[in-house]
Image (cartoon, rainbow, N blue to C red; front, side, top):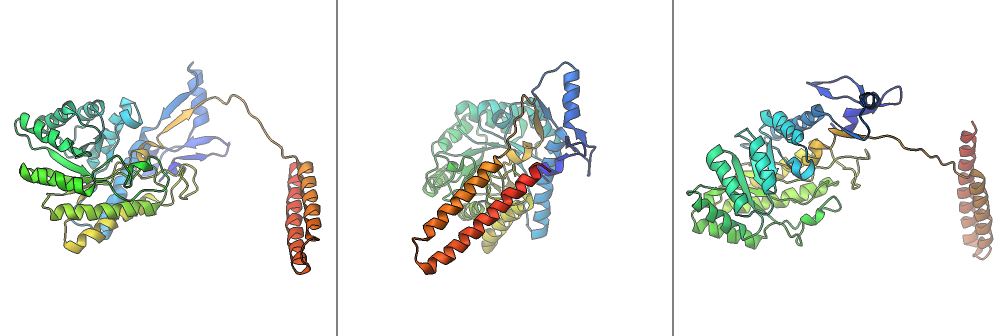
Length: 406
């Protein structure tokens, strides 16, 4: 499902939205009529129209598609639990977070926090104790204490994802001072895979400032073994960008991450979760290509590539399949809000048909003259091709002229 399923043009030429109602589509609602009613109430444009049904529909679509693929491929032991970015990061409206946690509760849909403000908001809103709360970004002592208290007092599944080597020492130190609470830990790996194009593609690849190298991950594992806390490490996370348009980049990143996960299991870590980060793109322009404002894959293909990558790598050594997490915030919220504004002015452009035809005729004459300086064997062939080309171009100009005055 996508924008084309929610928005269309009716017989009157008006943009209409069809919010989903249960398993069926709802009534068609004209955005033009909504704009008129808004103005009739004395409100001025611009306004943002939020359609909560679409938000719930996107959450349902992502979970249902993953669960269908898991069933079809014989995926064993694992499940799908989607993680999304809090609205402080991508949408600063409290209503958005309330809607996500409300619609996502039946799916154990979790949240991701990257700052203290986001973590406080997520803890206060996430009432489902079976959902995951993923803590990324910079972590100071206050941030870590908040997460540890959420684990100790509220029973939340709050995971600290270690992104720089020094974080593990601070987390373990704060855990001891909190009365020996066992932290839930994850590692963010720095993949060599880098998406071509997309948003924030520099967050992937060897030169990325985010994530741990393989040697740094080994140091963290050694530290956890030394502190007898290796059993606290459950999760592997990576992120190679947002709005990744090419499915081959999605699969390449997933395959590489699965091999890292495999090695962590061999090191003795109690691994059970893979967080594939963001990247699920939105086909803004409808071209279904690998252009930066589109994507050359469906949500189903995205799910299949992730699930099949896990099966392909882990089944070789009989490693249990992990719980899958994605941070598909863009694909979740992109369709559900619309900006309505007044059209201030219009302009039109009529192509100068006569001058275009004259220019084509002059170019034809010029190219014919240039043929005289060629060898005869080449001249005849070149002259014929040029004449044919400009004959077609002139015919096209004539048809444009006819259509214009029809």
